Image 1 (cartoon, helix red, strand yellow):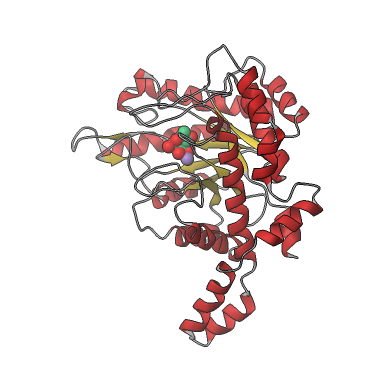
Image 2 (cartoon, rainbow, N blue to C red):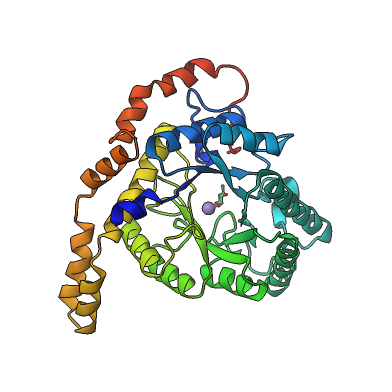
Length: 381
Ligand code: RM4
Ligand code: MN
């Protein structure tokens, strides 16, 4: 039963994880980094080849802009993967200094909206059903702009994007507490994102980026709440020690990841309607191996969450047995699921240890030797 559910798990990797990235202090270039979206997709296909559960890759526009998106989708299919969510980018243009869709100047707002609509065109061309919207909009100083007007401008843009969506398309609205804005962010938390989505309708849902909260926030509560309301669209998984660190998911706090996955399963969210995406940057570790490790971390947390004896837990909860209920949860968390997952992989025709199998494959040495010349992909830091 548990193996069957794990076999059906789907985790999406982000195209930007394969490019160079860094902090605002330094980007350390790595050998073998893709020079174009085609090479990024080839790397993503490796993650799927060794884990068996990462069959889609998210694109970021304009970082992944190509002349022929249908050809890019065919290239992906030829490598055994598909195009996942389309991510918009209205945060890297001089025009957006004071905001994008919330900018005080209508010309800038129109430009930002045109980009969001272009992203829906890319969805049409690639067959993607999901648009992910993240805005860097906000202000740095009290009084800088009118908070209320900015909400109206945001609502207007979201409604225009919503109306442009096709039958089988949806958008996921992402919130973030702060950064790059330091005083006020226009979508700072799940409540604001939720309220905008509720107004719009069923094709608007919230995406939870696990790095976008204040320290100590109970993310699994947010997950339970949104699922109950039918508004959890998916996750941007990553982990953090301080702010939006974008480290490998499950590295900083595997117990939190387990608690999140438990609420996903408990709330009926372990289906293809929930997008389980990674949103990470591998600044100092090798990128493809870092993605494989991350996929495995999510898989391990999921296996442990599936192991929770829900009947025993419910009985202990009903009886008010505080320690008993906690013990049921901890028993599952403390189970070593690695042998179970190794067995599952062998049944799926995969190597039991994806990290070792990838290292042995020689892929990294090949791309490091082949990908010389040209400009390595990066996100511009
Ligand atoms: C943002 C946000 C978005 C991601 C970009 C690269 O902080 O998390 O999801 O697309 O970073
Ligand atoms: Mn994100």
